Length: 148
Image 1 (cartoon, rainbow, N blue to C red):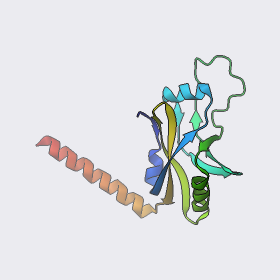
Image 2: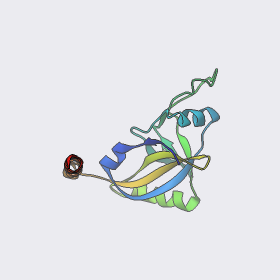
Image 3: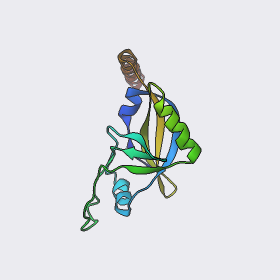
Image 4: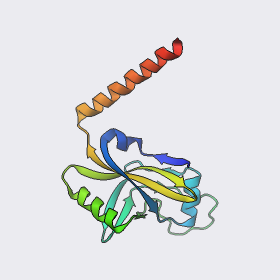
């Protein structure tokens, strides 16, 4: 299982309550591009259109050996493959006040490309400061242990 992209900002900005695994509907050249690591999840989120869930605002660069690909949109919304019950549950959670659904990482499972999505509650400024403080303390402790 190799990880191609991690949305670090999502874990910093949101307190993740639950996580789900979903498949992605991709074109052939997009799969090759993702396997080369040409994916960015900065500012990505999950949206619902009709009966389906979509991964929105994810940038997948054009595969450089794809040849003449016309009308390729690297920012297009990509359909998420989830069960109906999961989609209905996530839609209900996204409509609750203060909750949002964000992608956490893109990875492979077997030969399939999967995305991990999480239900997140936005952190307040003091919570973010606390996270930074804990991270700095851990770094300092690791440095001290390394010196010994």
